Image 1: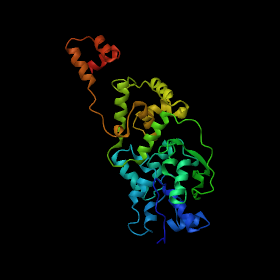
Image 2: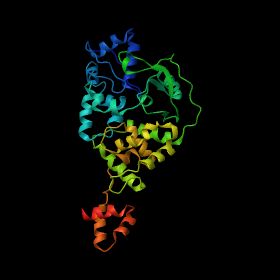
Image 3: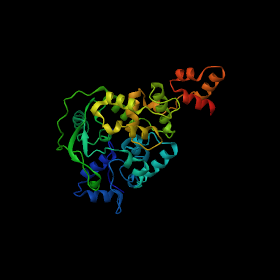
Length: 337
């Protein structure tokens, strides 16, 4: 049983709670702290999912914290699992709460997340507020989200600290401290496109989590793209160049060019594991909220049946093609199928 353990602050990353325990325990070595928390065969907590949570909570007084609260409020699990099917959500949760080392792969983080943060970040305004309210700084979960560039609370740029973190340093602990240096904040105005994107990122991380099928976003995006004329009525053809140009006009250089490539677009629209940022970048372009993405659209019209009925009533294939914005050969193929 651990004699004391700090209570998490609002929006605090679980990794940060462990770092604060390390500081307040007076331990000189991070390995000693991790051994206290996880036992001799300790598993170093990753920044994303933060190690075997159940094993640690078992050493705390019963009812002090629940595993669900820790996972949902202090790790990145809700962000990465938001768009999973129901069964994958449940199995991923079990992996995370038990500290299964395969959790990162199970959730698609290793292959889907293209830009793990290499340095810890902070909002300068939050930093001062935390010192005044709590007497110490701490790592905010939303600030460390790999895709986040803005503090959505204060609508200002996040800044890098002098605290570096990567996968080769997982057996070290890097607490937020009074002496850490915050790099100079950008004086550039925050663009509206990034504010909209990062607000949606924050909603994806922070909104109430449930186990309904999150993969319905595929149908939502498909329907929205068709209504814009960026995808064929059958969904068989995507006008990637038009979408790329629209994304480029919206985000400019604020989003990596690879995020807007035809290859990435294809992966996002197919049933592949992708980082949520790809879905959310498209959602901002299409004017979709998180609620929109997670609720299936109304039934898509049966265009083939409509065309057959029109042809049988005497309309020509050319007229039907003109009406639906497709070529006559496609109309002929559908009518005969």
